[in-house]
Length: 454
Image (cartoon, rainbow, N blue to C red; front, top):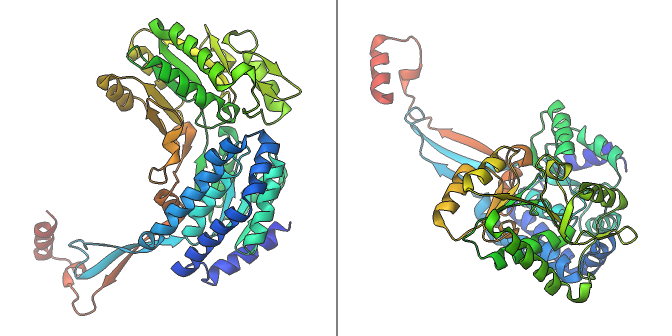
């Protein structure tokens, strides 16, 4: 695809003003909703082919969330677009002041392979609701999903409004160096830094949805059986290839063995007879080998098995893990859970705070003071108390990282705001012209200014 020509067409279409009216934006969101109906089966099939996702999981974790986001945004779009009037300051009177949401223009959305439908279409909803044109760059690691998304967008929108560019790293570099009005990137920390460096050349604003090692903290007051069940679910969904998956477990040492027993038991209930047909596989051989490498030399208290031909790794718990080992230094992105014990809560908090700020944190406890202490002292993108993952399933709650785990947020109103420039306008009166601001200055005017502002 000639990306320069595509960029020109999108810029021209945006400058025509066609994308700005409420009626147009609502119609485009409705058109996308209709496309979700038409393309649901191909999307589910592509998710199965690329990642081995069962239809139920693919719908629950991708297609269904996109549908819910579309419904949420369509119902609230008119209110979001209204100017917000604010009281003028003393210096502005007499005047009327307002803040409005202006679309940025032509935006770039770069999505990853692990949730290729959700993490492409959810930011797109925000971009279109805000009145932008959009270029989408899906991952080459999920080729079937990328192909279906390209066909779906071509069938739904003209490319001067929404277009998909397929390819690998070369296409990524070309797009990052182009003068987009906004870049929304979801992916690894390393590539996120490259995106930010490239965007800096054009002073392009960015949202970076990255990752990191998201901890689970379990104390002795927690419902251990429930903590094990929900943590296992968070590790099994998409074979742990989730940016907010529980990456490692910090557990009070006197309940560690009980947690491991419950985890092993729940795996048996999730997959009766050891039949893992409902579980997704690792995306490709490269990542399979990387995860297996992280497991080398570790003690697997649960699982530990792997099948290279099927790109499958069993749900695994590693115990007696060295905090400085490779499995504790990089994001695992697989169904492997290292376990580290602590005696006092302060040890767990210090462990989390001694590492880059995570995208998510999960705490299982029944103690109110423990909850308040952890939430007050640990910085992270978002999380759950007595659950995992589900904080990102609400359009009413912004989702995003902090520090190394990302910058910016989206979902619902936050998506609309992310893809909108907040423009302040003051409409000044021409009937009255207050003389205090004009030269020549005098002591009398200074005393009046002191009276007004002090």
